Image: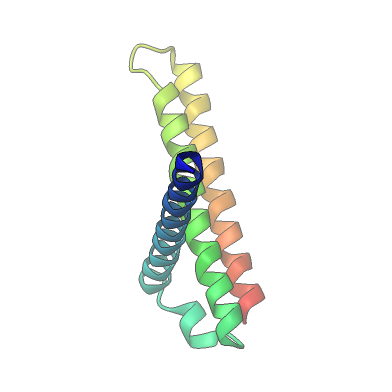
Amino acid sequence: MVRDRTTANEWKNRARMLALFIALVLFLGLINDLFSGLPLTRGSRSWGIWLLGIFGFGTLYLLGEAAADWINGRDNVTDPPAKRALNLVLLLTLVLVVCAAAVSIIWMAQ
């Protein structure tokens, strides 16, 4: 009996965390749309596509932040210039990929 309550509480906590994570991703996507000039809000075909685009923007933001943090974590001031240049190239490539993905999300939503 006690184990069933604990399992139910764990499921409730996990469901709350999932709901908060989805809300955070949607909020980040909405902020990205706002800073991009509202291309999804102005030009989407329906509410569902708009919501998917906002979710895609938020997910893309989180992935970009995580990858940039990983690349910047590898960079040390004491590294040789060639290694630092490689980290810079990786970071710039990441920026290009994220921008291309954002443009494709906007293009698919319109």
